[in-house]
Length: 462
Ligand code: UD1
Ligand code: MG
Image (tube, rainbow, N blue to C red):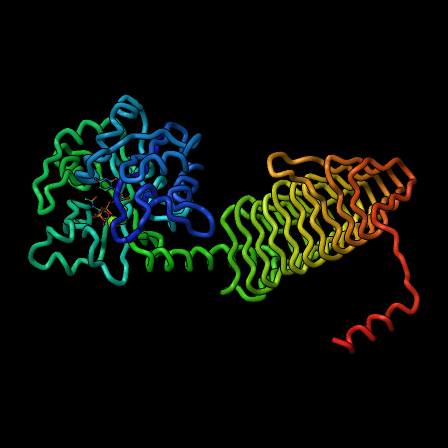
């Protein structure tokens, strides 16, 4: 059966108290990933039809975050969750099958719980199945009213509670799966008869019941999964739970995490067995870390590909790749598609930008290589730098294999250094060097013997 998805994400997020009016609540990040993308990714395996995100406040920003992953429906005025869903009618009204409705600010929902909801929906042949939970404190949520036989009859919002309805512990988690045709038919009958004067999506339960349609409920085993992120305290609470969930998964897969409380691993990161993660390490984005590496302490990796049997310590590495058996750091930096091949070494205070080190290249201390390519087994002396930028354009430095770059050498690009050459220490090299050449570019040393005594005599007289 065809299944579509709608994700509610038009709300303002006033309680986030953000200065930036361009960013929507669902654009806030947990472990490097915007809230809306956590929800989209949890839904994705279950969706065979169209996916629509409803945007409003900060809608341009939200649209960018989901580009290529979902269609957009605008809700220019926030008149309630039912009103929001109506805005998707031009895109979805004629679609067959079921539609899964989720909230863009509820990032803890898991693929497994969505499965549970969908399985119950098809097993019971329901027209509408709502996701419910029994949190410790039901305050603020819509309460689920059931008939004596257990059937769900209605949802009452916190502000509309009467009598002792507030004592009901089961609440609406705000996620649903519903027959698409029937959904759009009944949305037309919603009325803003409530304290907030809004069109409540939850009122479709009553409308479905009136028509004799079948309504069921799936209760979340873990109520944490429905936690919303309405302010920055809830954002941190959700981040803590997601961090724990991810770290536990890696540990059970054979990764050692020495201090799980102080290790931050993004949801799309993969890590091979026997890799050891030391404290205060953050690994985000699309990072893939191989087996038996030692990462950290105090390391930041983002969008990094790392081979097997590496040691990476105290480094800040982004958007780059390290192959096998490479030692990096402490205090190294890689960025903008740097590539370091097998058996290479990057030592302290070495920065690589858009640079390739072929096999066995060593830069052990204090170097900057930008827009460069270094052939296998070349050695980079301490203090060597590429002058790759003239203030307007960037230029390339190409170095052959087995070159010895002396300490404090400046390589003024564009430049070619032939294989097997030596560049003398402290040279400023701005002309190409043929292979097997010694290039020296510095003034000759002059020794004035005995002149130190002349200086000392002069100093005494002052
Ligand atoms: C909603 C439910 C409530 C449930 C709770 C779970 C309704 C009427 N109530 O209440 O039963 O317990 O979620 O968290 O549905 N949104 C829009 N456009 C709008 C209004 C809301 O896109 O006009 C979006 C929000 O951005 C949010 C989601 O819909 O992602 C839920 O809206 P929110 O205002 O948080 O609803 P609640 O009052 O919390
Ligand atoms: Mg809410």
